Length: 198
Image (cartoon, rainbow, N blue to C red):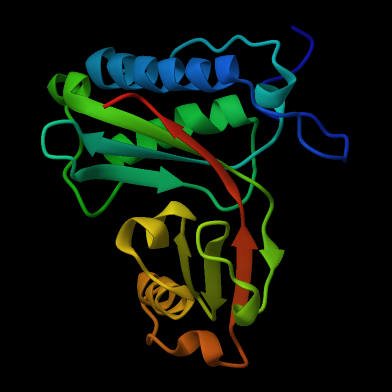
């Protein structure tokens, strides 16, 4: 393979579209990563010729308990640093071991988890009145505080735009109305999201 999976492609232009096969391959890789890393402390070998998986792109990986449907871990990155396939490996490990809200996932838990992946578009500045619930994810930055919510979060909880803005502030540890401040930067992104079957 001529492309280094850790760096992604460098040329500008629209990202290659993810195929159904690409998405299934990423889900399989995320599960393999959890099995091998939590089981034997090893990272899986990564091989792909898919242009969409070699694209430098930010990803989130979310782990859900199959039994209860409750969140078990979620980690991601706001800005692309590596190829999408490499990001999914890194974020799968982080979701299992580095979500401060939960104890680390054990190898025994992995079969009982359902995996979801989000592949993000680049961040763009947005005005509060331009936010479209269900389409946009949000990232807010104020001083050293930052918070991010994926596009499906307000849909899941039935929030309108105002509630979405308040909750992204809370995620950053800010006052609920902080989004109205002049020193606040608000960014939007879109996301392709998919997951394993229930």
